[in-house]
Length: 368
Image (cartoon, rainbow, N blue to C red; front, side):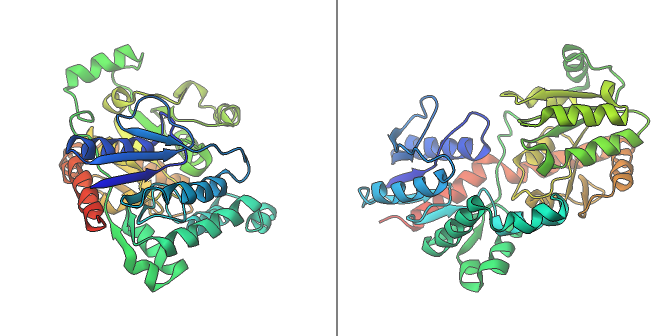
């Protein structure tokens, strides 16, 4: 069996890119021929890479989709598996979710009224909406990482698209993401200069506005205690630092930026908080559960489907109520031993091995 993967570019912090690499390497170890078509890939992925040069900045998604179509036609005997919105593939993994749903939530919960009026006419979004429709129509199988995304595709694109969808949840590396003993946790906290008895909240995700950091900061200001660790890329970092300062919680927030290794941060924390405006399925939630952290997120996160309210975490509705979020954090900290145990029983159901096997089975169904 031969498989050609499509991915516009790779960067070391990308969950979808790492997922692709993991899947491709599993297939290569089994003796399958694996290729990657991309505009940029850093490092040696362990299989053959074919590069496409794209020069358009504003329309790079469209440029890649068009060039990938022409190049992919040369791989006639391959199963073509795309991790991006492209227009010539057998399987599309919708790791970015439903763009129309994201725009809907963004207008409702994130943008001021005057900006929401023009959002639909932004050239970038017009291109992405066209690409998404064509990608879904031209795919034989659509892999979604949550029921939420499948339902969104059905709502916006109809029954035919909905029936093409197969839900395969994300997987987590249970050997890497795992809990530590209390003794080891104290050592990690010492290494990170965190007081032993201080409740630690962890927020991890790039794009702080979409991920809901404003809500977390406001909730933290309502709590008497607690240290918040913030991890991820953000262009407007200065805004959030100033916001924390205005709330009077500067000394209780640590902005660490993007981090390649985050396992120690999960293991040193007590609760994972991600009140996101939209996430197809935040893999960070799954990693947190695997490390024994109860998760607080929103119903706009596909990962909410594996959260049992009051057991391994809490699920909030949008728009997030700051007082309710603060109360839920207090509830987790109050019932932490019990909720940690339940979090740890959740993660093994979603191992990376199970997810990869499901994806491999899907690929084989399209093999020539």
